[in-house]
Amino acid sequence: MNADAIIIGAGACGLMCAVQAGYLGKKVIVLEKNEKPGAKILISGGGRCNYTNQFASDEQFISANPHFIKSAFSQWTVDDTVSFFETYGIHGKEKTLGQLFPDDKNAKDVVQVFTSICEDFGQEIRCDADVKDIEILSDGFQVTYEKKGKKITITSGKLVIATGGLPIPKMGSTDFALRFARKHSLKIVETAPALVPLTITGKDEEWFAQLSGNSVLCEVSNDTISFEENILFTHWGLSGPAILQISSFWRRGELVNINLLPHHNIISLLNEERMLNGKTLLSTLLNRFYTKKFTDALGKFLPLTKPVAALTNSEIQLIEQTIHEFKVKPAGDKGYDKAEVMRGGIDTNEISSKTLECKKIPGLFFGGECLDVTGWLGGYNFQWAWASGFVIAQNM
Ligand SMILES: Cc1cc2nc3c(=O)[nH]c(=O)nc-3n(C[C@H](O)[C@H](O)[C@H](O)COP(=O)(O)OP(=O)(O)OC[C@H]3O[C@@H](n4cnc5c(N)ncnc54)[C@H](O)[C@@H]3O)c2cc1C
Image (cartoon, rainbow, N blue to C red; front, side):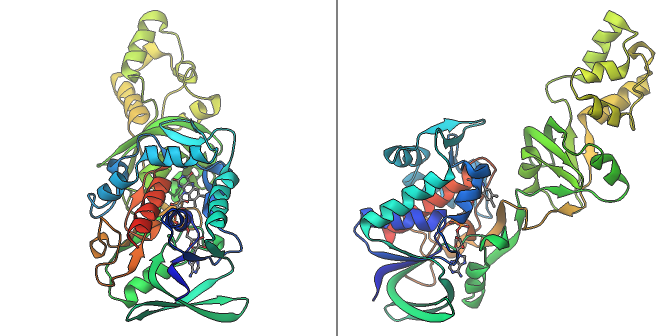
């Protein structure tokens, strides 16, 4: 045997797993398809890496089994993440909504933490190693990978598949875990891009396109959930944190409801203005909350040039509906090229929630994004990747 365990994927989960195994004196070999480890960590949070969220709990995750992550999150908490990074000089600074970023460092430093601990423990990270095949032996696993056109085979008693999800294929993402699962009859929860911008086509396209670059604080909701954050108009549709959040809950054909003024009651505002200065134009009132460009665009739906005192009841109703219940029917999403995560994945019923070992294949562990565990935007996905890496290291 070449090592106690082979870890496939030097992403967030695989790297944490290698480090934690090092603390326990377990020798691992990490195989990574890319030239360097931690590709997605490096681009995360715009290169700053939103590495956890102070408020992370099982409630900010989507999974067919919402209880699955509870055990891992009790074994590795947000405090564990925070103190792990603090030990290595990365101190968290909250940007917004509990999202922690390295204070005076960046994503490169986060990856560096893992690579230098691996070096200290003699954990080998073999890059340019594209895993092609896994054979299940009576006492472990035989893994074959390709490096510079050469096939290399290694063996170990335990195997970890931490090959991530499908987003951003050009960064090395593969369907390796899903293919392996299918081959061994492990169930898969249907996958789809999540935390992904939504597209608008047809007659509304032009209206959205004219607002490209405008960002507005909104409450975006559907029948199940709502998020209050900014939306960003683009020439092909909608992006920004509120849209990415709702995209994980959106299904093709559904409407998205946008409250364009979540902290104000527009009818009260109109009534107050009618009492104070009825000559105020509707556009003047709306310009107090929006850019001129955005107000002007609302002119497609609203009588902007009318003084507020002259508005009829049905016009007031229209204003209320437009501002507080702006309905959008996205045509689709921008797909895996632009998604931050994958929804769905290997069915968690196939995996022990306590150890993350595959129930049908003893000695094999799955962690991170390849499982049916999808976090909201805001550092939750890394918290899951760290936690699952930690749990696997304890049990392999
Ligand atoms: C643009 C972007 C920004 C993001 N920002 C954040 C953020 O700020 N905060 C947050 O919490 N989450 C963020 N995420 C999500 C986060 O990056 C992922 O959820 C997380 O990286 C998943 O960790 P993982 O270890 O499961 O997979 P990954 O980090 O994707 O690692 C999997 C690794 O496996 C390798 N691999 C795949 N197949 C093979 C194979 N056959 N052989 C060898 N190696 C293989 C891949 O090359 C990859 O390096 C972001 C995602 C994207 C795309």
